[in-house]
Image (cartoon, rainbow, N blue to C red):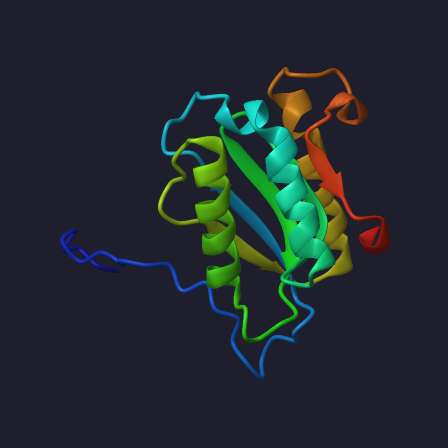
Length: 154
């Protein structure tokens, strides 16, 4: 355990270990706005969800779920193209949506590789219930700011 608090990691590693993790590994990804409490994401939901769908269609990532909350997003994604690794795909997406929406994302993002199908279903339920837990809607089906790929349901 480090006791020297001056030692800090500058960047999270976000790279899929080649040869250990298959290229179809699914990740739970979360990132948010620099300004917590803002509703800039849901105010710009249309263009953001269009960008999600375009990246899915282009194979930059494949998306099971991408849910927009007012100041953060949750997604289940996999990154099939080794020339377009997770860090680059997320950074490019954040850069484009920030310019289009006029807001600023936090510098990094959180990712967690899901190892079991059971865990995938738990994370999907967690993501879809997020607006309900936040008191924004009564049922997950009522939340309009979500992309669920038809070809990724399972």
